[in-house]
Length: 154
Image (cartoon, rainbow, N blue to C red; front, side, top):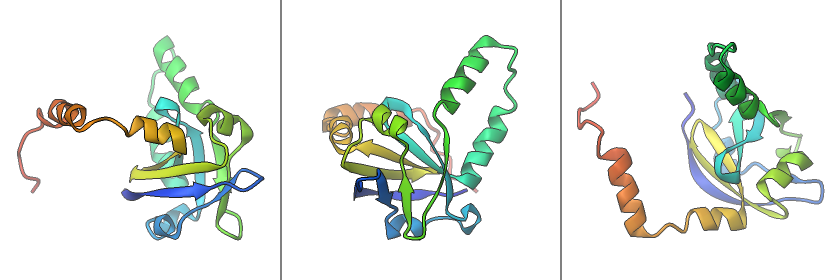
């Protein structure tokens, strides 16, 4: 499984393309072959999945019982806007206009890489989301991580 790390500021050109930073390119699994799926994310960002990671998620989603209305609704929402992306010869990725509009991205973006994905945020929205004060973050950490067992992995 890919495990990305990093935060990168990007500028978009007039055609809504951004250059995938070399720091991220170095972290790509060669199996991805610079092919991705770009999708709507939560909290108003976009999510860029390497194709091999998207395939793993899609495989899990195929197991949903589509006779259950909540499953169908989730499946539709999750795939809404999903677009195949291939880096061009210069290492740039094109963001479709509908996704640019969804994420309110214009000239500047922040790529926030973690786990198996790269979130793409408008610079202003990212600053807003990340402006949580330290006390709020401490409470969130306690809620999310406090219930985890302190068992070491073997």
